[in-house]
Image 1: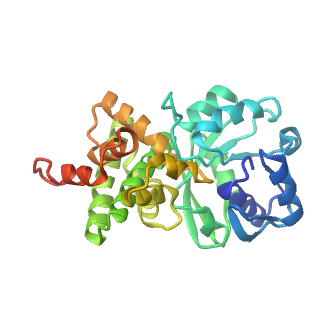
Image 2: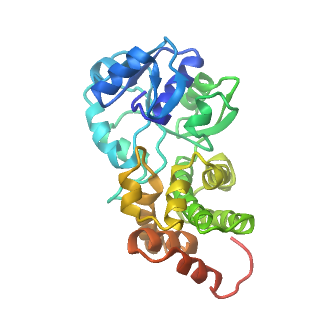
Image 3: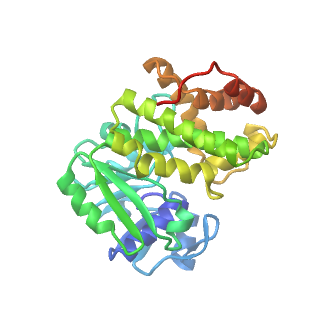
Length: 326
């Protein structure tokens, strides 16, 4: 398990509960030593204990020496660098499962594209869906989707991840699952902005529903399948990220709606809100693909052009009337 933030720690525990010996790699030696001794990650998951079958190290070579599968919980902007560090130590042919819901800043590439460039020869999968680390770590029933091209290997990984509280569905729509995980974070920031401005359930329902329309519109343009867009990685993750108190992206939006500047919010965050980076990449992709994403564009205008949130609400509401559809 590469990455010892909230999701990496929670997933290491999950893998252990599924019956596996797990090596958890932490980038910072101090954190690795603390986790090894105290069996708890108080900065990210206070009160959650790591089982004895989880070993912790800051030594990549040691962590990967006997790996049968590598799981990566790394922010999108750091994934390429981490993958390059993995390359000399990862045993040949070991499957890689990434848990990152974002696009690479600068290139706009999906995470599997980054990994295929840096770690060729390894089967690649993405795990996504409505799965907040805080709830997975406390054994709340959770369902996710595992996507990759090799379905036979995917079935083995699927069975290896199943627990009485963690259900895994399988898909070969890697493109759709990865894009859903990225786009929903931008929409969740918009939902948080509306909450921060003091709007209620009507506004939230409209935003989620029309946000789904944008997700479907963009998904069609990149070749995603309908069952992905309306499934766990699409609609499911959009709902949870736009409504949950655990959502970092929604929290960023909420604080912006309350009047805080973005740079101050980001400077005080311990964890990454992927939607901030993704909003810029998505704006460029939408223009290239000629896909209309008014909600995502409004979020981009607020985050990266400093336009007032209320002005964007007004602009959205006063768009020319149209028929409902996707």
